Image 1 (tube, rainbow, N blue to C red):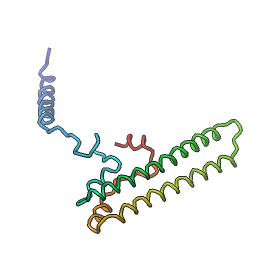
Image 2: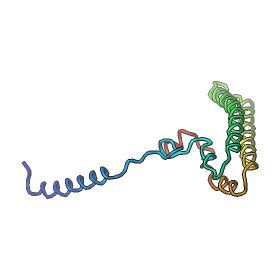
Image 3: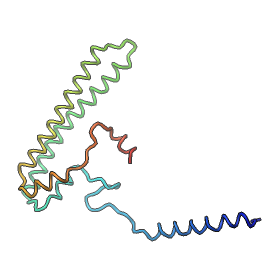
Length: 158
């Protein structure tokens, strides 16, 4: 049985609920645009294909450069994963060998530096093949990179 007091509270709550659900029902469905993944993130390399006036030759050259670059980077990523696994093993041992741990940390640092240099070299190689107008677009539309943050941390922050 509803009392006068509870009906005074329930009526505004029900009205608010109807207004909110009606507003959501009328919103257009948000679908990813061409070239976007769910969540609105551009895929790797897809931003390059948005460069204005890109010739088929430039696109093909960029694609082959990208494939070669990714092959080289994959090899280093695999080696990096091995080093990190080794570091975990060393750091959780009963008798920790700090000399060996520091050596593995130094190796990881060298690999990260090498990967950053390779990434920048690839970027500069792509820039060299662009016209001035295309280069301006390319430089101003680089995808956002969250250096130092792990992929899972990035997903958690969304």
